[in-house]
Every structure is written in structure tokens, then in C-alpha cells.
Amino acid sequence: MVMKRTAKHIMTSTVITAKEDMLVTDVMKLLLRWHISGVPVVDSDGMLLGIVTEHDVMNFALSGDAASTRASEVMTKKVETYTPDTLVAEIVNHFAARQIRRVPVVEDGKVVGIISRRDIVREMDRIYSRLVAGEETE
Image (cartoon, rainbow, N blue to C red; front, top):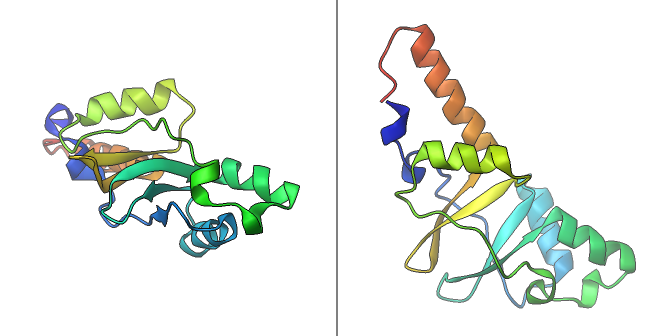
């Protein structure tokens, strides 16, 4: 049953992150290289400090300040997060109710994964594929 599945079942556990002192131009390179729309910003211990999105980058890139601006200056500091045990149903409802693209999965303050819209779509595909095949959706 889908209700028993949690964030740890659907999250991407290899998370591309930025350091707080990274230049916005370097964050842009990360986004482009990995084909992602945002990155959690972490300290040297992997503790979540914030998130930088394409939207944040565009604001500074167009002003011409991206080459001298640090990730810590543009990041959103109040970040919604999930724990590895957050139910998939709650995650799906959260994504559906808000205009968000990704949410970090955090355990003891450290980023352990990330869930994006693509992860949600992948999970929905898994569920529906199993339903069509007449299998349980555990």
C-alpha cells in the first residue's frame, strides 16, 4: 500500500549541494551540469543552511553581481524539509498544494536526500504500473 511508503523510499540520496561560500556563478555551473533546478546549501559538516534555486540565481545573474555574490547571500534560509520517515501521501499532498519543485530530506540537521517533482512522478508511475499489473502497491 502506498500509505506505508516514506521519503526514504522515493528520495534521491545522492544530493548535489553547494557550500555557503560558493560564488553564485559556481552554483549556476552546478545547476547546469547536473540538470537540476536547485541545490541545498550546507556547511562543512553537511548541515542544511538554506537552498538556492534557479530563480535565486537569475535574480543575481541579471544584475551582474553573480560573480561576486556568495550562495549564503542569495539562499532561502527558511527551507521546508522532510524526514526520511515522512509518508509519501503527505509528500504528494504537499507538492500538489504548493508551487515547489524540490524539498530536502533532513535527519539530525544533515541533508540525507532530496525529493523533486520527478521523484513524485516516478513514484506515481511505479504505483500505477503495479495497479495495471494487478499487484499490491507496497
